[in-house]
Image (tube, rainbow, N blue to C red; front, side):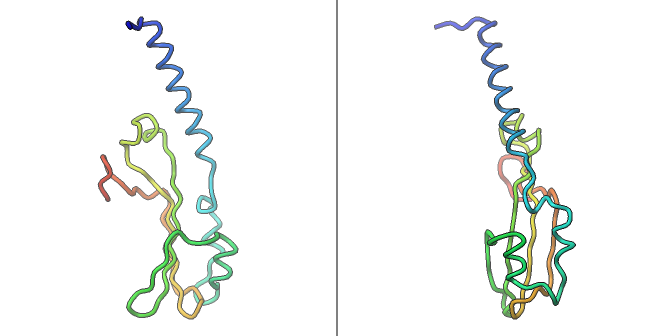
Length: 124
């Protein structure tokens, strides 16, 4: 079965339009995209319950050798380059790492639009 140039162009334009519309729907900002999120966190005051109420359950938890509990949150950030390149462009995320001692925040780190992966899935 042979496809004409006109048919190929029509299918290509439809596929590209679908990709852009999907990306537009997927870029709705989440809780970590809120610029005020870190303004609500106070070291030595904000509790685990406060963080859970503000952001929800963490994607990952761990405890370091000093007994500091670490909660990690991440939220993918879509960009046009990753959509157009079918995922081969760097993936970015908003990342929040919160450290607790005795259920109270002792430290946190927030990275907005941090590049997570280089080309072909290599960690940066």
